[in-house]
Image (cartoon, rainbow, N blue to C red; front, side):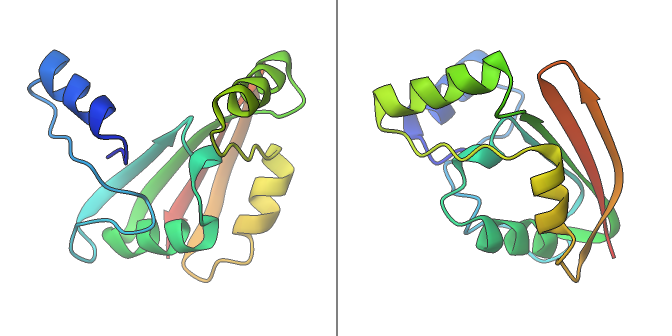
Length: 130
């Protein structure tokens, strides 16, 4: 899933076995409880409406399913580079620390944080659909 048509076309061309389509996280074109696992790898910082995106991800994830987030720490060199790139391209980039993200996710009634891990400039947050 990617809202950018050019990126999806590139994925389809380079990885034809991967099913890909144009869509935003805020409006996922899948039925309720469709997936056992959902991954957001270096993408969360692009979500225009975080709460709506998380509701949609929760909606398409079955009960007991896993949601994995991999993000970059905003205070790392990589995070500073991401923010600079966003300013140069005019792209929306909102990076959060692992604590800021888990605090934000803590208010979710349907997603429970089950694990966090930090390695270098990146971190992982694992959640379960309750």
